[in-house]
Length: 483
Ligand code: SF4
Image (cartoon, rainbow, N blue to C red; front, side, top):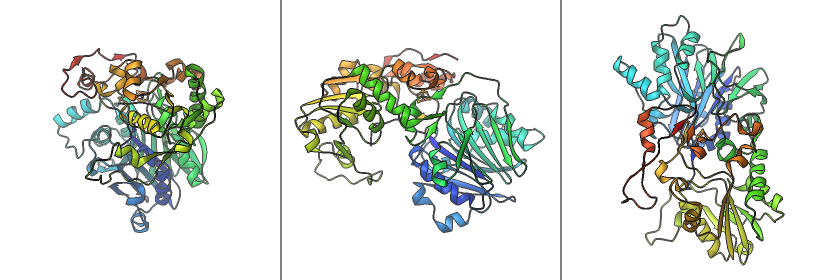
């Protein structure tokens, strides 16, 4: 319902704990924000691999009897939001196969940009795919590998992939973690007693009482079995391209990703936003929950009070029944309600992390005005989103990104705000380590670090004016690859 980009997935894996499936279930609770369409767990007991996966939230899928059917001291788990592939059970993960190298299951966060190419090649060679997910190609490459050992077959498979992939794989007696050489998506390594844990975000380690050891390095493969943990680095070195949007919006503020506290980075974005786009005002109000950290930094820097002038209802399901008599902005009202005593008569700075199409922001501005605000100044803690993501984030077509086709003042007028300010790209990149040199920021620049096939690039080439479905398609520039 909210006009936001969506993260693709969360992954979790554990080796060497007698409650492996239960701890994975708990870990997935912490990673629920990374995907709410489906979830699954695979476990292994040294003899074979077991799997359960369903559409829905973690809490709706797993209970004591379900978890009891997942025995063993090894497990992997996944929360999914579909980016490549449709939202249906056959695309839920872990995906499990049995082949000449034995059973193997996989969980994936990211997007394999050459998946279609590989898939076409394999289909011509006789492979039969069960899903439309990009992840399935990993298993087909593994099954067809002539390598002498399962480990070599994994290495042979993953080194054919390009794009973004943080993977957790399970065999009957092994947990394997893989991170692509650009390090697009996070993947942390932790310890719980003698057990090893891998997960997308460190908040999952906190929940189960594990300690953070380090990140799985970009281009690293960790093989964990009864003989311990081994690290191999089969990829040629590549420029790093951590997703900066993990810091802006996706990751939980209580996580550390790419070696930095998300809360600290996000608060700094707010401070810089205040320095760059400060405006005379009475109160700073975050759009909850995503705007809270940046609003805190903004208020601190601007010397203004931070007040929670919008209250979010956390108990709204994915769908709800609308009244026959249409209520204006019903969808947003179900989730957010203004606090009139905070907003009435005030000059309000509304802080959020991003604007995608602008549709929700426009409704929120109207809601704040209707609650009596004298002025509404919208401040966004990242630069305008002008290009789609091909590395594991659900982005609308370029034509639907309001900042790709409209000037700042056109967007301000569409939102109905008195003023609008975005953080600059420099401001964003100076808020993360190394002035952002190891980060991907393609959705703000249109310059892509990893090339993608032209059938996907074609998707960038048409644009329709937002809110005008009858407008003629306009030619757009080709995306630029800077690899
Ligand atoms: S394009 Fe944007 S969302 Fe995608 S990986 Fe790069 S920074 Fe992240």
